[in-house]
Image 1 (tube, helix red, strand yellow):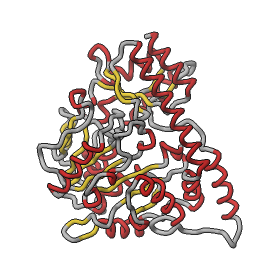
Image 2 (tube, rainbow, N blue to C red):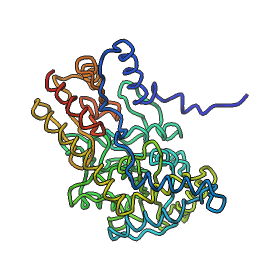
Image 3 (cartoon, rainbow, N blue to C red):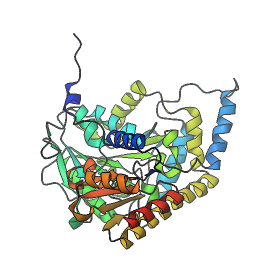
Image 4 (cartoon, rainbow, N blue to C red):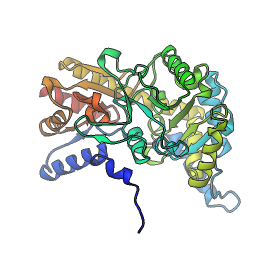
Length: 404
């Protein structure tokens, strides 16, 4: 008889956003006349920019011609895209990254789950609390998180690093020593950031204890403050302790086309084994690469027109964040985030739980947000609103909240 991966049986319920989708679907079915506005899931609403669309059309035409047709993509991704990534995301910031340290994929979410394949099951992870749930869930599937403790809404073998108002929603160095540290800045869901000096402390710590940092920089395009780093490799010594995840989803609207990349420096090794080589082997065996058409679209993001157009889109969403921040503050809410990230983190009023506030907003204002408790135990009593809606819906939603 075949066996199943019993680690999946330890997972509590269903995925956070699946729970939200079910609740919203049930509400809409019972209230078909209601105009429900979603400021919940982190999906974009603006179409792909013209430079990207033009590149995709050109690539489609190439695929229709036998002399320019492309089949399977190279294991690491096409060199034209990796060169654009190296020159614009790293070299332009004074960071030296080699082409064979860049691995193109179908998105940071996939890579954040798949990267665990190259690590042993007995590694212990440390995560910010709250943070994107995929980090913990995928490690639970791999057997690294121990047992789920429902009364505490925690895993027994995970080191949680609370990110609270007292720490400006940034983590402190863990008291227990982890093997793998997950950092996400700008943070999802809190929108918080740390300075380059603060990030340097994490790099120094990881090198000291022999840990590896998995650094999610999916929202780096939203950084507006000078002292906030765009890449962990801006810090000294990061190449010997850090893996960086990047995405085209939030900066260029690729949520429906899927494109991202992971950087693993050749200096990063464990007991003489280079992680770059392990990931290259895994990448070549289990991933066919993002399609040629999509990689050409990604290249166009780095063109002069693409840079200007994607910058406009980022500004559009950050203007929405400003509307949300100012509207909530005028309504008496305590809020943070929304400056270097498209997320606004608010305290739920009157001692309401995160899910109680979700139900309250949906029933009384027809607005969908994301309960903070879904991102970790320290998220209880908080709520995330996203700036990825349309400007018109954002204005309408804030007026509804202010009217409650």
